[in-house]
Length: 80
Image (cartoon, rainbow, N blue to C red; front, side, top):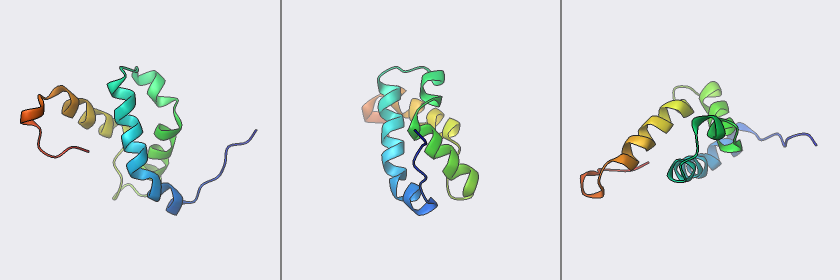
C-alpha cells in the first residue's frame, strides 16, 4: 500500500505533533535507529529538506530534546 502524499502545508501544520512524537519516543528510551524508521522522523526530514531555513534537521532536534529531558525540571527554561 503506497504512503499518503502530504503537501508541505499539511506537513507544516503537523510540525508540533511530530516534535511531540519525537519527544515521546525519546522518553520511552527508543534507540536512534528505531526513531529514524518512524513516520514523524520522515516528516521532520522532509520539512528540513524543503524548508531548511525554517525547520531544523531531526537529528538536531533529537539532541535538543535529549538535552532538555536530561536536565532537572527546575533548571529547564523553555521546552520544545
